[in-house]
Length: 470
Image 1: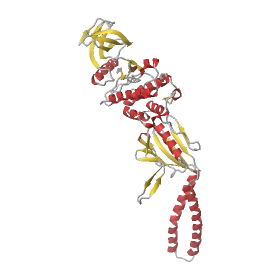
Image 2: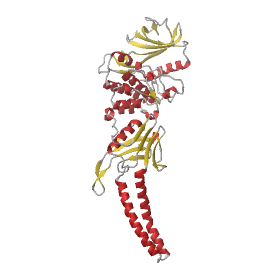
Image 3: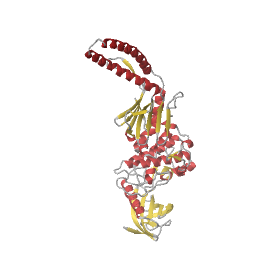
Image 4: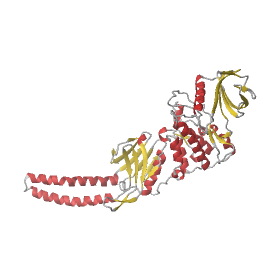
């Protein structure tokens, strides 16, 4: 149905029902008004689109999609859909979307006049994540695509410090499973890299929320911040605790594989006790080399640190050399008098000694001269052993996306099958699909417990995975 109207100035009627009170915002072909519903006498917000004023079919498609999506939503933090109709205006054919009015100011406006602390930031983040969980749980997921300070409202009369939180402006909303458009929508600086290529998914909203919070704590537009490998460099500008800083860094990871995969996961990470804990510092006497960048993490373990296993090996080799030389002398004397079968028996008898001796020699040599390297990239994780230029991967490399868990087994005691109390050495385990990468003082004698704890926190920080302590 097409409804006539005279104009769109204050005091004019839209749809013979909504009286315009004032203009809230405008851009090419679009206007947003505060109006009064003459049937309910409540204030409403009217979004108007005029077809023909530099408006393309894609703009109309997004406008109609916004109306359809809002009609399907029912959440106290999202403006309620009220009406949708056609308009005939002097300036051309138009369409109007009517929503419930929320008496609140934008986060952007609040930041100009109010001060907030870290607890307020966490409270706001949790509130918006709860809204995103509601949107993303739809089938297909509803992705906002334009989360920014001006689209988050805080009530002007807060019950709590930040008040009630609302998410508005669904003009860029997308339904990933149903939408195949490559139109780029959103706001520069708050858009994740994949959105520039037309890709949209729930994790895209997490990046936008993270960029919004970074604007909160730095006072700078994200587009004005320095970037290294597309990663926003905001930590020098904020006094946030290390745990919350790491959480924000993961929210705005340019790579989807390192970002939180869902609003539910991001919300759960905000509740972790370790959120406000600092990263364990590198032990002062550690000779481990760690190189960390946005796309790679490399840990090099030094050779040459003698350990009890190596000492035992050297002792065994010494005793074995004496015993073996004595045996050779005896065998040589008997061989001159013994028939061939007896010689073969002596040869077979010596094989286990050769195997054990070579194995122990290898252990000692690697303990003194061998190197080990753990290497992680965006594609894979690998563990390489090197001795005198010879290299071998044990276990074989695994895809990066297969890494699901970082386990830190702390030193403890348990009873064995005989009921005896035995000590369990601490160890760090990286779970990647069906393979594990293990590090412990028992296997890698160059590692101390402090180094294991330090490496666990560094891996947790880079991979964006919590430490599972057992």
